Image 1 (cartoon, rainbow, N blue to C red):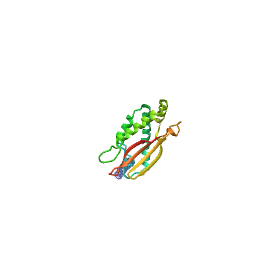
Image 2 (image 1 turned 90 degrees about the horizontal axis):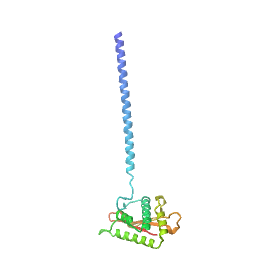
Image 3 (image 1 turned 90 degrees about the vertical axis):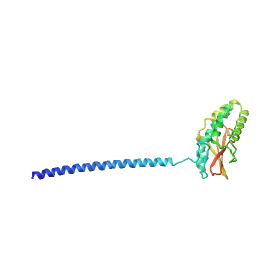
Length: 210
């Protein structure tokens, strides 16, 4: 009888140990599964973010594909317009066009035997004439005040003046009017994109209308 009780106690003890092992084992599997699920969710979120690509490529020449959203391009070019207003303000103050020329060399498409684009020299020379005319017709004091106001521009202050999509080209025009200046103090910058034979659009011209 005593031997049977010993065997029964021993069997119960073994059953308890096995149950504990199974319990903790299942808990470990649950934790690992939860960790794997969280990792998968994080990866999915990461993939979702990376899939959202900008319409306008700004690494070199500004370009966008044959099929594009006007709304997206308008939004993505606003920071570029603000930057160009600042560059213009600096040129009016110093008379130098170095920053603008560098921008053109990097972001405007150059003409070649395979296209009929205006080319870097045309865009740079046109800008240089604009700056010289403004500096010649305005006093140094007013130029200094005006240029400082232009260089304070922010992207949110730049307004969309006009946009147009024609056959083989598209234009995006922005304007900025500094505080305490009338309508004559408004700067208007236009981006003209031309379509190449491969379908994509490239920045051909930058023009300061006023």
